[in-house]
Image (cartoon, rainbow, N blue to C red):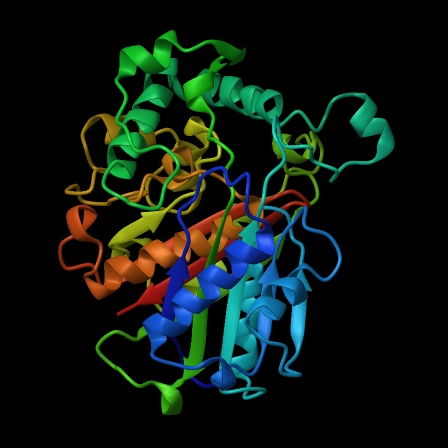
Length: 380
């Protein structure tokens, strides 16, 4: 397997675009990535395009805006892991020598209202399993009962991420909020309030990957240490996917733990070596248990570490330095690549006011219905 580098990234601002389609956003992100990599469109040998609701041939429509040149375009639908799954396919294509330069794209123009998840069977849809904030509310209650976490702990995630997001030019929310504002927002599904829930957004992000022979600027090239994807485990409780724990056959490790362990083994490093984390915070409490499942602390410890400032930009383990989903927004197909975009900025030292000092290794984690769990580790 050849060593693979990210040599270019591009991202649109994530917000609501009434006058743009997904292919407009996708082509904008790709052109920005090309400019960042100092490459031309003719240099790209394959495109892997992640999206969820954009329909047949969505990646082809985005590529068409730049120019159809006969290269393979593969469309990837893997729920909220679509963008990071596209990144993994681009990584594999370069690592195995199928091509020298590949592009990963994630894009989405979201419908209004709650996410209309179709990742359930008809009977499950009739029973309301696809009401995501209700599913997360069940998981939150369980987490509170097991570890003593509070609504205020969840609010602190929102406050931290909105504060970080105010330092990024790409996110939908640009203003900080207080704990009081979060706690006074309306109840959505107890114990989750409106400001505990991430906003939807339209947006796109892209990354260009290549082997060492094609790297033009070694100082800005970021190495891909691991790109891992895992699916569900029988007996695991994943409320977002309508799965409850088996009383008789509970698994030793869940989907997040499995993907994290494989990523650490592949990269040859451990959680103690990671300098910056992009955790999956589609709901505020999910950031807390995500950090724990990724191996950064013991179960139930994340709320205390959050209160102590460990996850702040200037803390020992900065988490969601660009505001995460809670501030940046959640265009499903683009989310995973948006996380990777932030890690590349951090590892290059190009993150501006949100820069983590001496960042050398970063981890991004995205979850998706199915369920899917993707973990990407990048190193400088």
